[in-house]
Image (cartoon, rainbow, N blue to C red; front, side, top):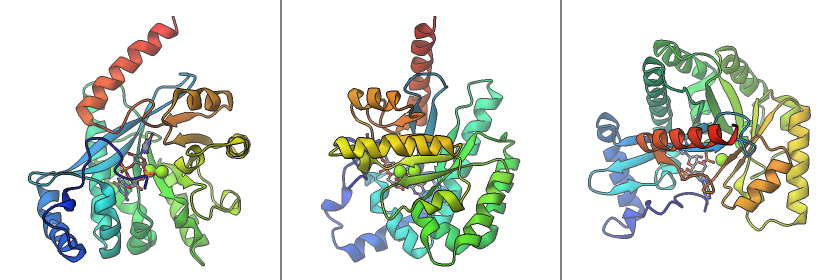
Length: 288
Ligand code: C2E
Ligand code: MG
Ligand code: MG
């Protein structure tokens, strides 16, 4: 599984609360209180331009820091909250936290790193065609400029029957409000190239799957998807990159951004700010 792979994320549930039912009940009961206590936290994982020709960006990933259970990984609760609808609240909460962070960066005159947030497909489905309104409201309330927040939608969003005009309409609204839209986990499930024909997205995120057990064939596919994306005016982010040799190959293929442990795991906000400062210093030195 690609979830919960960081060293510091351990499974609390191997111990006392082991039954699936008990565990889900426990998580559900904790949800509201944890939301109130800010136990859900934004971790930021850098996305780096392999040629260092653009400033870094970051993806916001949720971590549930529970006072007793420790760090609970998204794999342990996202699927549950998708099933029972709590995901809408959580996605919006994460988005609002990110807006709060960005408005602080603006206030303090610091670098405003572009940040992406994830939006579950169940969220789109249950919130309906007005889903963009709550995002626009929060964005405006925090005074966030256009073009700095990216919304990540997984390719499965686009694949449900008869959803074409529904999803298209939502994407158009999001983009009209100044959000960038990216297609997450591209190539993971049933991605069809017609997605690229039917939907206007700004960024393609190549799934980690392409980079585990790489071979000549997968490299050819990646190289040509990058070329295709560029010809359609999209940027490409490669996800789950762990080795420097992969970075070099992807840089030669003109991949725009790299996200993976090779640069950094997802970090708490303060640690990300430290990482960013160090990165900015290093690339400034390189460009002299
Ligand atoms: P994702 O959006 O595809 O996020 C990338 C996942 O890959 C993250 O897992 C990240 O920690 C992991 N990753 C990054 N680099 C590497 C690497 O080099 N090697 C490996 N093995 N893994 C890497 P994470 O944080 O556990 O999140 C898993 C998934 O949970 C995310 O996949 C996303 O679908 C979902 N998720 C996380 N936060 C949110 C959220 O706020 N809302 C929603 N709806 N979903 C979220
Ligand atoms: Mg994502
Ligand atoms: Mg992904």
